[in-house]
Length: 111
Image (cartoon, rainbow, N blue to C red):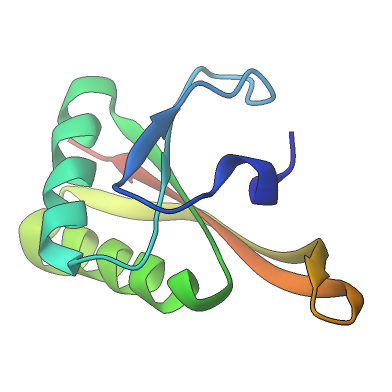
């Protein structure tokens, strides 16, 4: 399943994605308040120990800010960013097929 297919408009969404090997939580990040999303991430991180943030296009800076707030402010010393994957995929644009940037940030609880 492509990231473009998963991301629409609305609130942060928990996605069940079977392409991940360790049944981690996947949160789709959209352009919305950073602290609201950070609390969603913190809740899911407390329940499962690992959360994956996915974003595309203009929502990428929001996802990076959320990861920084969670790891450096809310859970300082108790969490870390395990991996960051930056990619692009084909999307439909005004002039046909265009490339859309995507990001996947994996955050894990350390204690």
